[in-house]
Length: 290
View 1: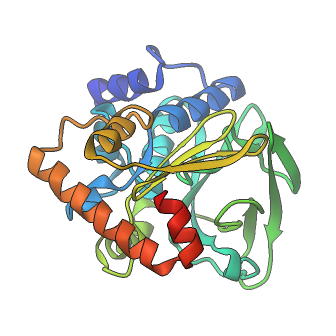
View 2: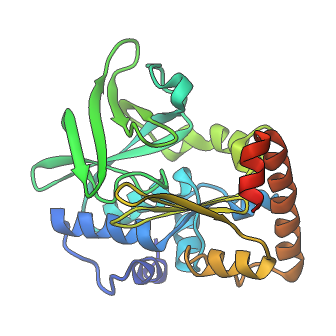
């Protein structure tokens, strides 16, 4: 990674100089990453999914873009290694409510563990709605503000860890203990970023985590998840409102998008929104459109 790439990435995180590899710096870096670099799939929606080579992701982040787990955790792992941290990449799998008891590892997520100061941590900037700070890698319940997370051992045919977020849309992540490389995720990335039945292809998603909650934009539905105040949502009704939120709240630089790109994406988002409304119960659909 060239000095310019390295400096640009750190500037976006708000670190003008490389911090020492300490626990405190690790926590600060994760907080900054979640707050300043969005989980987003705009380029996938436009039919030009970026590759997951970590150096490519570093350049994209320095230029104001975001990404999904393979981009976000891949680049963050590289940055942490450059800063002197001991990082291990792991094949993981995200589980929805219906599958939360499964113990296999699907491979649709890249997870990280980091060793520093004689401690080991679960580190993840690629879930979108995950912890704001690293979690000590030990079995038990971990609280951050109004959020509660769990870590348990993954045992059976697969061995490793289970990350638990019972109130999240994906309540569990199974993490294989063995180290992984970027190449282990290439085929899955190709499928997730191009297959017509992939959620990343079907639905625009942007997420941003801060100390108090999670901001989420799925299609035209903007939500704020706050475990203390509750969840609120509203519909973005115009392209101007949509792009103001994308570039403002989610801090996704928009300079790479042409007028044609913006028109195409807005049309896709509106079509997906109509399909979503049609699939909801009549009462819910009416409420969402009000």
